[in-house]
Amino acid sequence: MSIKTLCSKRNILITKPLKRAFAAVGLDSFDYCVFSPVLPRDDYFDLLSLADIYLDTFDWAGGNTTLDAIACHLPIVTCPGEFMRGRHSYGFLQAIAVRQTIADDTSQYIQIAVRLAVDIDWRYSVREALKLSSNVLFDNPTATQNLEAFIKQAIAARN
Image (cartoon, rainbow, N blue to C red; front, side, top):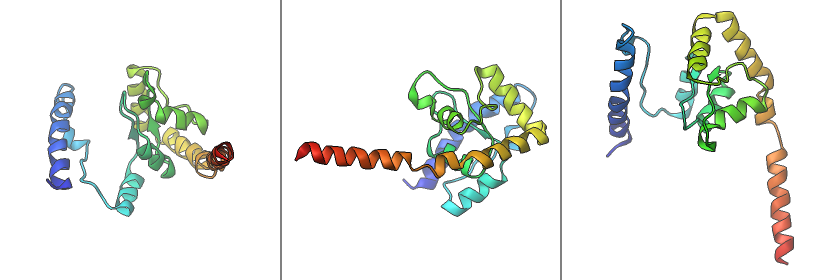
């Protein structure tokens, strides 16, 4: 089975509940949501640069996709879950001190998403905060230095 077929089937499964949720408030999900097949890297970043908001999923937060959104200065709405798998975006935003889009619960998550959608000035200020602080994640040698120290320690312990 091809990747396009998998994406297509997955989108069908995703759109049914999404369509119902939008319909419950009198909206058509296809007027607000775009589904894309897997894209080449440059096209993917072009698409991210066109987006207004990145909505992090509940209970299984973004890892690489959140880092990609931060690299594009795309405001991220997240609500940390109970387990680590639902706390990646939260951790990244905490690390760069961009906390205004971290929700405590579902209701606040929706409020933040709506505010980002309608308040262009606030959305711009969040983008600027991401732009000014993303170097904390991307230009920080600490992880590499810690890995290097661990490898040296493991080699020394083995000898």
